[in-house]
Amino acid sequence: MQRYSGFGLAKHALSHHENWERQWRNPTPKKQYDVIIVGGGGHGLATAYYLAKEHGITNVAVVEKGWLGGGNTARNTTIVRSNYLWDESAALYEHAMKLWEGLSQDINYNVMFSQRGVMNLAHTLQDMRDVQRRVNANRLNGIDSEVITPERIQEIVPIMDCSKNARYPVLGASWQPRAGVARHDAVAWGYARAADALGVDLLQNTEVTGFKIRDGRVHGVHTNRGDIEAKTVGCVAAGNSGVLAKMAGFRLPLESHPLQALVSEPLKPVLDTVVMSNHVHGYISQTDKGDLVIGAGIDGYNGYGQRGSYPTVEHTLQAIVEMFPIFSRVRMNRQWGGIVDTCPDACPILSKTPVKGLFFNCGWGTGGFKATPGSGHVFAWTLAKGQTHPLAAPFSIDRFHTGALVDEHGAAGVAH
Amino acid sequence: MFYIHCPYCEEHREEEEFHAKGQAHIARPADPESCSDQEWGDYLFFRDNPRGIHHELWVHAVGCRKFFNITRNTVSYAILETYKMGEQPHFTAEHPDGKPAEKVAAEAEAVSRQEGVNV
Image (cartoon, rainbow over all chains, first blue to last red; front, top):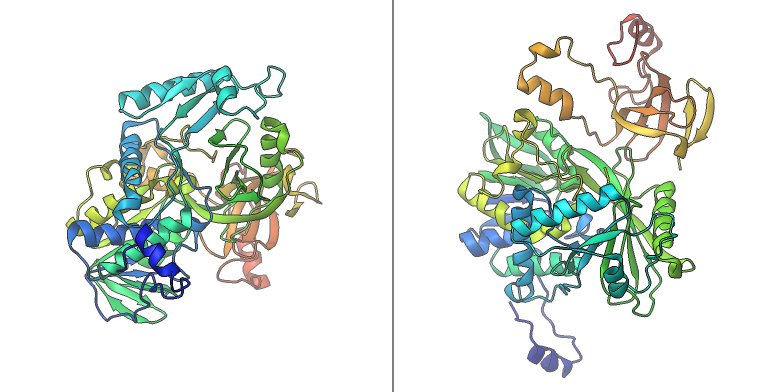
């Protein structure tokens, strides 16, 4: 792998940047691998990378039906934070946060991780109580988090309407300074390049059409490019997890919903942090390019069409304009939807399944991007050892029968 | 924007008047007290999540406030039919172009165990 550096940039400038090597190979599938990962999004690629790097398992294939990072990895609002309420999820997301902090160096790829802080606004007395409870829980878990007053919010975001006369007045917020945003595509590409360099085969345009299962054990997958064998298969397919589970003969407690986002025309720098509001339901940040990135809610119905409904857009933009009257005449450039696999308790599933050797990493719902490194790290451990990582243990699929749910509806950024 | 026919109001109304309530035709266990954890968990949390034809429960929230069912394609989003509680769908995954008439008649005889239906 050609390492990226400032020196390399200068060197390639001499040849007009025409001689950069390809970031990853485009191999033909082998007949057999040690591990197959189904799904080439951020989580799947991260899993492959950590399998190769931390566990020395390099005979790995990532099977992707489209192109790398073309699903939810490319469709989210790029927010990274770890201020979750319960110990189990806080530990998992904080594990991811720590990996984010060294990620660009680790994979030699600038993921543009910018710790510009995230605030979650409170608009009612109950919101305030919830914010205080969550901040206290975060601090007990060693996660940086504080309650801030409307005066402090106004200092950080001068353009927000913090007046008492607002329809939903801002009473305070939780504030995580270490949180921020990252460049979503770079995360997928960086992991893909690093995994490829360690020998992982990234198989694009390869769709899994079924599993080879004999005597309750997985032996590989059927794909549109022929059968591929492996004794261990990990599925990291977000919205399509339910479809894969059906192929393997079991059900998951997931519903796939469209979740949409939109970006505006580029503006001069006006917002240097991330503002989220559960109550009026909108969240917003500004990219380095200047676009406002706005996240909407999920559509209430199940859907696999990667687009969202107009009433949801309207609802979100009402909230954004209410909070930021200055944006009332900003024009929106693009709007799109991703298919999120929502779980009844708004927590992921990182689990063994009824089929031996087949593991699922899914159910991240509306908030998977922030967990990408942690999810991949923990899932790689799980696939390498054949048993669930201690951080993933509370997120077993068994919890829907034992009743030990981890209810994170309050900390999830999107109501569902 | 969906334009949904409410089978009770017998009118097409806009999507914003309705709320989706998830998978339809989920029968509540006849004797919840004697359910195993497995059965109760399956009933509460596990859902069909098909790519294609899906039967779902909706409520006409700001209209007649009645619950009814929709058969909808989750990829194209085409609404194939709406029908009242206690009725059976005409379009299913096995019969995407509609069931034969005799099968519909036979099913109409069957007692629906859908929640909220007084037979």
